[in-house]
Image (cartoon, rainbow, N blue to C red; front, side):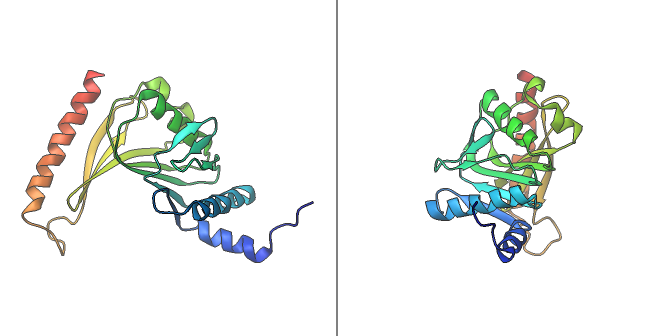
Length: 203
């Protein structure tokens, strides 16, 4: 029988997964990404709470119960994961791809938040949204960055529609606020809000 990991190693893993862990396929060496995934596997096996995993430009796809990253590395279901962040550049998923990622997320039974950065908004068939996500009230959102501002669109798990709902970043009255860019960004947010509502209504 293989020797159990040392207590010190398990504590180090527990400490590491208490903070956000990032896997970036285009930057990380294969060995570094593999090591990070092994840490997550150990945390899952020990049922340590995994605070957050951020996949940066990994363009994940789903194969069974695994996420396959751009580097062809596989991230298995993490039942102790609390937040999953998927960050790509203007990625446009098919309904089948959305359904697969939502199904993977549903298997992560401790998941509270699922965040997408810079994904294209589109209405989703209600049947593609796992009932367990609704039952657990998992927060699903898309965020897009324009200048120094972040626009948020939240998924209504009951209807499959995305609702543009928030603008974040440095706002009026805060140090570093850009007086010139804010009105333009605000208008772009309004345009995005109207476009997302129109897209949802037409699908």
